[in-house]
Length: 122
Image (cartoon, rainbow, N blue to C red; front, side):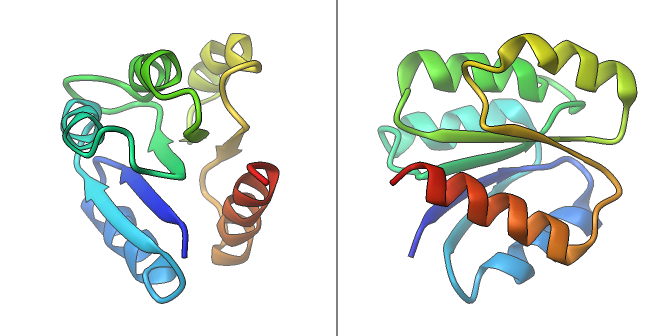
């Protein structure tokens, strides 16, 4: 059972993703990057995967990914975005993030992406 931290500001999508992964994995959800970073720090980085949206209030997913990669390099990072300009911003992070998933995605697509990111850890 993998430990996944999900950072997504859109409540409907966040709830759907928690329900999608909770049967197989331990999922903790945060509504923005700052909350997610607080959760990671409080747990001392005890997560296998960070699944984060790029565009969020307070702290965006790129700033979150940079902080997590610096402090907890063992956590695999998977970014999500529905905006082409945000995907471009993430293109320079290839060494730090496993992949960038484009929204909208199907449940099968996000499951495959998460499965691939977790498999890459081993």
